[in-house]
Length: 66
Image: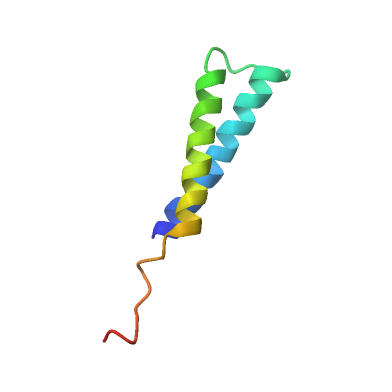
């Protein structure tokens, strides 16, 4: 479950980061939400990477402990 959440956060953060950067420095226009989109994209992207990197999935069953 944690890996799924990490994957969703990573993909969502990457999408928000790309849209924010394209809006701030490119030709795309999303209104006044460009800098919040960049900030939230960075936060969610690195939080998702952290979940994928350092957390073990809790859905697995250990045969040694049974």
